[in-house]
Structure formats: C-alpha cells, structure tokens
Picture 1: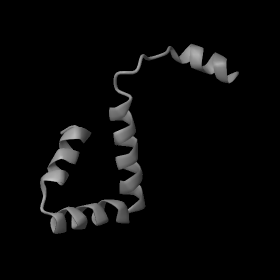
Picture 2: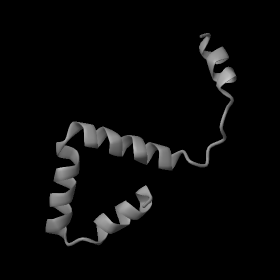
Picture 3: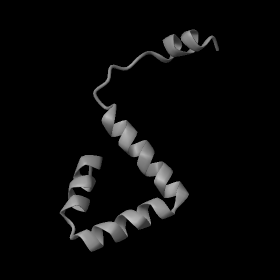
Length: 61
C-alpha cells in the first residue's frame, strides 16, 4: 500500500477514529520516524537519480 493510499484510508475514517489512529501513529518515535521516511520517499519518487560517485564527489568524501 502506498503512502497516498494510507492517507486516503485515514481521511475516510470518522473523525474520532481518525484522531485515535493519528495519535497512535505519532505516539511512537520510531514509528513516527519510519512514517516520515516513507512519506519523504514517496514524495521524491519521481526525482531524477544521481550516481553515488557524483554525490560523494560533491560532498568531497
């Protein structure tokens, strides 16, 4: 299930249930961080990629 599908499912819940789900999702720090990472990956999915060598060269590593 994609992040967009999860968001749509949460939005479709009645307000009280939606609030309970959101409270649960943000109450656990590790889960919250995983969700943030997943949402960021989904948002950047269509961005062009770069070779690792180029990135390392730019970072001067």
